[in-house]
Image (cartoon, rainbow, N blue to C red):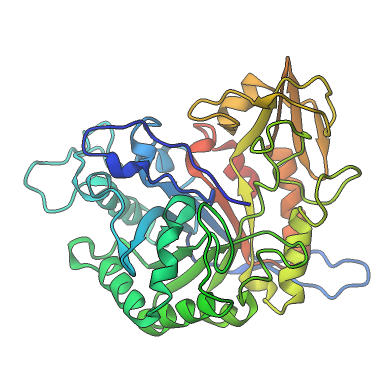
Length: 413
């Protein structure tokens, strides 16, 4: 399903920040692996140690989540990659999202990664300069610029008409000398090729493969090329709509969005966890769970080492619910901090504490509200699964949803 970020309120020069697209949502590269315990009859697989965290461009507004918070929460030391979300796709080209947030906003000493305030005449300010400061503190950290997302994926159909020109535009933007050293590659978050997301795409089954091939050709082997992809494992669903297996040769890894399977867009319910690891009795839709997604992609021939396990740092909820267990009816989405039906883990852990677990994730009933979200304990369960499957690592949407001391990212490690 789609990831829908919290949309910032309108702000000075930040109209483009409304690009909360989301994938919810929702890279870094790297890493050696650790051997996972072998299943009784299965060969031992090697699990990767990539930990890719999405940092949202608009988080610097209402959320006041700065690059500095990635450092002070302890997240930077645990990440291998950051996906900076999002750049736009328009006119067949990669384009800047919110240039004010990215390159112009002046940071005070208190807001800055290194405690040094921006000056009026320095050539680069904004998130990009803060990311450079973060990379200086963590030399192994890689940053990718992610393009598209829920709101800005409509432009990919035009881009697919001339993949080489699109790739050239992306390379020129990502590698622009004005922010040299910030980005180590590109991430494509197309929701969804040859299928429907916020808009419907009809570019054909080969379009995604052709776009990824062009990006790899232009960026070369020295840069990272990755993609966030659908988790829809249903027969004839979104995975089947595009040639993800054929495109896999061109990517360093995929981020299958193994969250947002269920949510209050189905306003009357039934309530269901948005990020189940496995199936369970009464699940509203077959093959709408993480292990089905991973099994389908592996079955198509995508190497396990090129698949990262997606973790949501947020919950989805309904109100008007009387039943504590999953499967209850509702009257609509529960109230959230930034939009209805969604809230951060850091809020929910106190606002609506966990009352039960199902299918490897957690749920919570408080008053008339019902929420589902992952906790450090359920993330631990998912990490065991990740290791057993020999996956390349973990990615998360998105960093600001964690507590100030990084409870969830610590569980990933």
